[in-house]
Image (cartoon, rainbow, N blue to C red; front, top):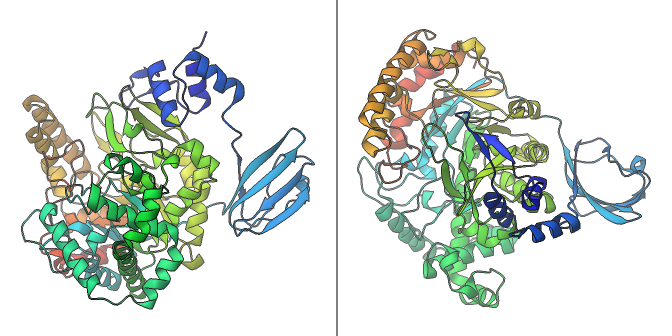
Length: 625
């Protein structure tokens, strides 16, 4: 007989079993099931508690109904009376499914009055698909690395945008620019954000920092923040800023209060005095009044960051770019940062996002990031997800969703038990992505890219393609065979994709050819000398194999290969243009490798004026990009 705790876990979307990338079969234990249920907010430590949940349920969640915008929804409510609440707040009443109206773009709520209950229904009225972009190209750049001194800034990207726009590029991509932890400059990874709906103020330009091949965030961060405060102290609040504060409302004030309290009590709200751990507590209500000037400063930083990104996007479009700024959305958020403090119920605290065991991590990976709780997300009609997308797309034309495999399932690692997969509402989440893409650019539309690498669930790539979400086709991974490497020719690449050689987590072109990341792993202690020698020998075979499908072995050959693929977009990497060997991030390392600290030689100006850019542009033009 099945343990009711396991039965409850399966009913709530926790996988009963899974296979990792090495083909090893894992069965979810009772211990793991109980821990993951608790992270969802369901306490079921005993069989008796689990039976109560199974018998009584945990409240009636809304049905999700995905329909096409501009059409009548197909909802199985028979002749039940209903109340329809449009996204705008407008209400309509009627009876029977046939009486439902055509729905405008957006997320609407329907309440059907059945004889035995009232059923909430979320109507996601989305375009059937996001139109594929025309053939084009652009460049990805690590924003933080674009300065010879201190930390790179939004302003340092401007000459790159202007240069690439003049050469026919359609976009400039960068690392996530989510709000980080400015009061603890050692927490600088762009993929461990404090709040994904707010922006990183440390990318605002000031005269700060020291030169050197590596960024010293611990010194540069406080210096930049100090200089920004001086600018604010000398500034009379502009009408545009005050209008921004009014438009943003309580949510901005809550974020700014978090930043102020972080200066006083430290970066993580779990370590604050208990009376400040709830943003609606009496102490926090009092702090909003007492710390008004400081709250205004942190609000001003957000306004400045949004203005800077908007200026970049305006310049990109004015220069002729089809898409402009290409932002990156981190897969999760820090469990004790501003985002979870503001709205912790929408996150599964007590479990972390991660990955199952693989060849590089025999015990699996724990990323230290809080996942969305699918139960709360569904209960909230996906508003937190929609707002997260909308925030990025109001200052950009393209958005990359890191680890979009999480739309199908996410791997949760509880604190004291092995991890397992949790099912996510894929179709509804993709509908939200299509809705927000359609709204982008004041209705002109945006492009969504999903990082679909790794242990890909069956059917996910087909679902992404049907939604018009572009995949990522990374040349070092695009091959027919691995043990005896045989790479795919250019014509075999997918059309609905962004083609590139690498990513921020992978070797550069020169680094891969030299096996630089293998040597780096050996130095970091991740592999031993025998594994290093074996991996380097295999890399020699891989390099020979990729050279067989390319017209040469230099950069021009690589870019020509990528340009000839059917993939609608090609992403050229700044590190390749600059002949860099070291990659920006070596997964699985912390202090053993200078992650997110490696500068681009010469900064933004040098990259913008680099003589190789015109050669890249010519290669792209020859290939109808």
